[in-house]
Length: 178
Figure 1 (cartoon, rainbow, N blue to C red):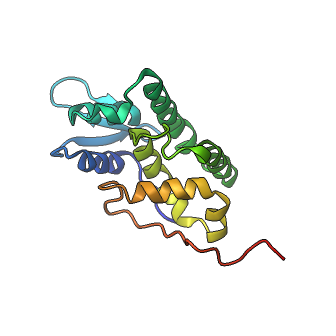
Figure 2: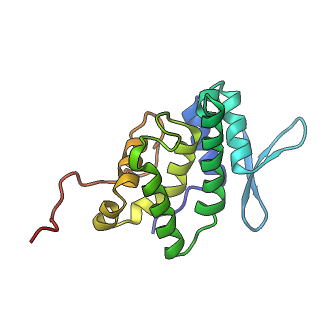
């Protein structure tokens, strides 16, 4: 089973993707290992969504948070889903529910927020990577919209970095026809 990208590592990947110089000190806090950005001047920041949004603003790439009020709300919704459901889900049943939810949502969308690449796509990709790596070919086909989205995001410039490439077979090896 592939190791999950969590906390400090995920925020460091985001920093590099955003072109930030790095050097931030990250830690985790508590039983749920909530990410913390330690600061020399003032209190640190807590929480994946809070720190990620801070890094996006620091990089002056606010478009990743959405442009319109509706896009911003949808991005926030998926970031919340990521933290509460993807990070919180640990059973096979949780994983199936998450993939089913995403598959339905992505049926008519290129990205989670519709037609724009956002922070929600980046963090959902990092959160799902360890799950997608372990899926069988048949499972990837079952969640075809998630597979299409995931493959697109992993090839988006700068996103994947050192994470393993998840392979998707383009030609079906079998058919349901008899």
